[in-house]
Amino acid sequence: MDEGIPPELRRNRMLSLVREREFMRVADLSTIFGISEVTVRTDLGLLADQGALQRVHGGAIVRDPELRLERSFEEALDEYAAEKAGIGRHGAGTIRSGETIILDVGTSTTAIAKALVARSDLTDVTVFTSSLTIALELEAAIPRITVVITGGTLRPKQHSLVDPMAGFIFENVNASTAFIGCNGVHPDAGITNVNLPEAEMKRKMVAAAQRTVVVADGSKLGNISVAKVADLSDIDQLITGPSAPPEVVAKLAGRGVAVEIAESRISGTTRSPAPVDNGGNT
Figure 1 (tube, rainbow, N blue to C red):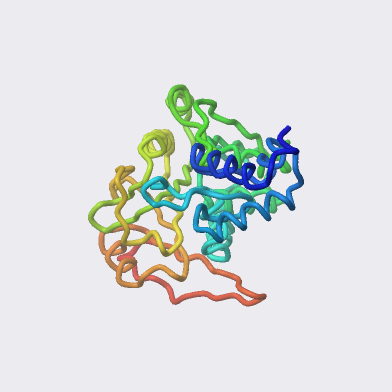
Figure 2 (cartoon, rainbow, N blue to C red; figure 1 turned 90 degrees about the horizontal axis):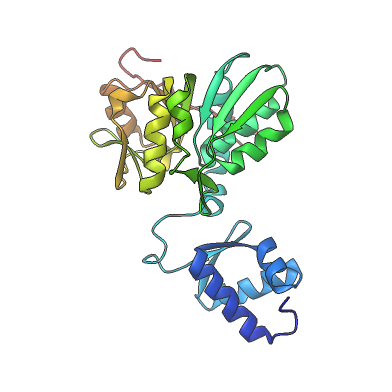
């Protein structure tokens, strides 16, 4: 424990850890330095005030965009939270008892996991996932829901498992539906993601399912990221939210994508947009 070191030195060491690992939890820093979580939050707050790092839900990330090309799970968690919850309820509402599904990593797919736990009517559902966060969310629904974790190499930023080994399981799985998250949904570029190892896992998930549903809040529509996941022709449905740009939704629908816009409940109200004309798709 480093309980006795001067506060300034302790904060410098904290900053070094955040830069080295790109994301650090408050709880982990508390254990490493042998101090309370309150003290950790104070230290991180001071470092954030100095512009040395950025505070996010549950911890801190590096501030320099050149050091942080990919946003952490915690950073994205609170953004479009109501919209993602609506996407989660919408996606979970399509699942029936006895199905086998795949849940990709991400905050929108985690919202689906939470909604699945809330559906007490579901039984004998099997979920394959490469996300430790999703596995923990689903744990409360065992044994109604069987949770299978892929294994593989752990990526701390998304709490996800990637190759080597993580993809092997999908070569022997035949799932009814794969729910895929992403960083970009574009009428021309298709489905893309910011991280190459994650993109490879997503491609394997798509290949392992009879039906592919992309889940993305409205901020992802119209974006193009570095790694290709799938063409629009490879997906069966897109579930998004009310913030989705109407012009992009119209272009995607014109390309034959079945776009569904989930309801977002905000402050006790329900906001439901007008139906999307998707050229006959529902």
